[in-house]
Image 1: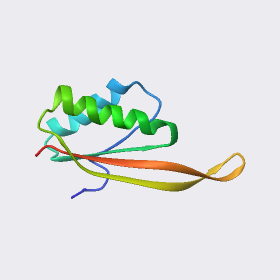
Image 2: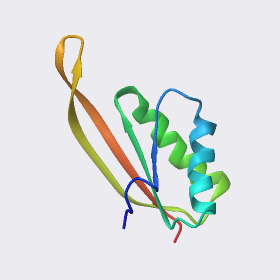
Image 3: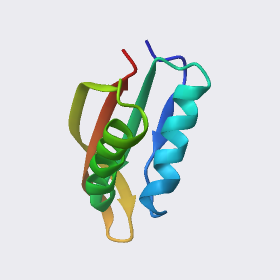
Image 4: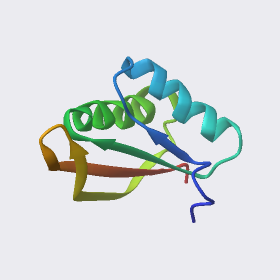
Amino acid sequence: MAKGDDNVVFIGKKGIMSYVLAVVTQFNNGEDEVIIKARGKAINRAVDVAEVVKQRFVQAANTTDIKISTEEIEGDEGIVKVSAIEITLDKG
């Protein structure tokens, strides 16, 4: 399973290919499993990253788990609830 955060890629505001490269690099460095995490508006970017990795770069990769949740974060207007996703890719 997961060894700390070594095999986790957090999705933010960069372009999709930056994150695709990060996931592919994890697989090339010997990881059998990579977890893609995103919150809020970055969720669609996380799904795109997972699909690009599977279709173009690591055809052997499979989606083995998808977890969705709601997280509470401190915002300007107090505590805000935000959606979150974790997509687990396995090299198989």
